Length: 264
Image 1 (cartoon, rainbow, N blue to C red):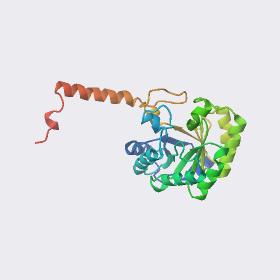
Image 2: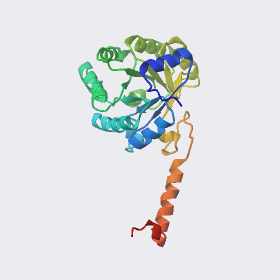
Image 3: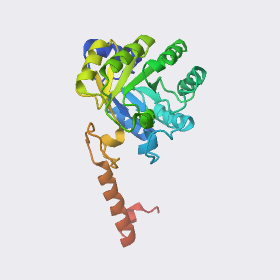
């Protein structure tokens, strides 16, 4: 398996060569090492941690301090993949200055190589400002979790003309790639064919340049609900519960610890 660190130019090169890009989320050092050694290209420290780690109903409660804390853990565990910090709600919306300052903290304090922000044309000035500051931007279009209340829930986004326009705008502004979430396959295919930068799909069908899923969905650790686009590759939640139950049973029965677990 390749050991060269993944860079922004390397991802753009993958698009040119027609090579698919694999991205997954991680939120701590242990899982960061696992997914990095598994060979993924990009590790996203998503604000989804508010749901799958903290137990909230949306991603909105995630704070800058929390995101920096988790991004730092992930960055220390990754040797090859590109680490992207997800800018949380209200960390970039209030002003360009605040957006640039907070984005810079992901690189300066947490060790990320890039940041992700949600939104299309409205984010053009920020994407340009971040580029001027030397901060790579992963854009995010379609279903925007930070705008869940404005959108009236987690709904598939079908406005083809707007989505194509927004995709062109974020590319021109300097984004190095764009996440397409909750978009009909036919529309995401048109966006992918129109852009020179990679598209990373999540609930956007088969024709994106890459795919991303939440780690806890992939491993079967988050079972509160399962979106249509998720494929579960393992059921570690059930395995973990069985292991803890076995430990409990052996403790109660006096079967653990055994003599071999005792110091002499």
